Amino acid sequence: MQFEFETDRFPVMRARYYTAVAEKRAVRVIVIHSMEAPEKGDTAENVARYFQNPDPNKVSAHLCIDNNSIVQSVLDNDVAFAAPGANHDGIQLELAGYAKQTRADWMDPFSILVLENAANAAAQYCLKYNLPIRHLSDEELRSAQKGIVSHAQVSAVYRKSDHTDPGQGFPWDHFIERVQYHHTQRSKKLLSNS
Image (tube, rainbow, N blue to C red; front, side, top):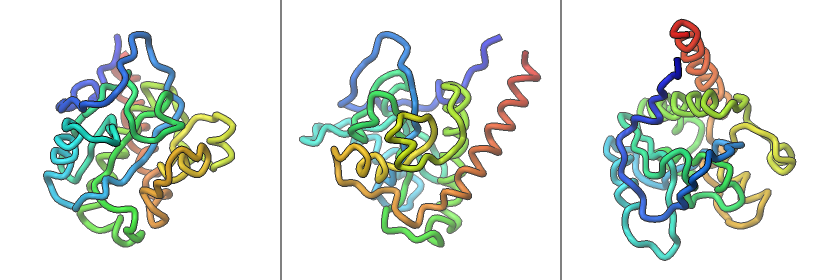
């Protein structure tokens, strides 16, 4: 029995810019971004709508995530235009908030829900693409290892952009722990359904 992932059923607001891929894409990393947009309950939808419009920068992401919703802008197997250097083999997750946020800001009641939604989605991608649940170092990213990284790391390693999101205050320890939690819960469900 094949397990159906929620990532295949998120509401879709198709982005204007992406590359369609016919064969199964090899995903190596999950890239975490901050949207640079307000902490509001409709931020995921607003950013997904932004991705639908013409933009000289030609930007997109797979998922837009806020405290109460997840919207898919680019289908999992297609390539989003989000983090040059890790687009072709990355899943791009845009989280409501700003790179300037402190750890305390990321751990406030709104962002805790954002992180929970993002961790749940990331756990599904880890299962779907057999990715380890670990925050890679820059050197591990450079040496093509699998895992989870920030847009800032992709910028630093591949030098094709200058983005610093999701910022130095991003609570990686908390996020990775929550990805692990959701991964464990979903793995148990997979085993019980087989």
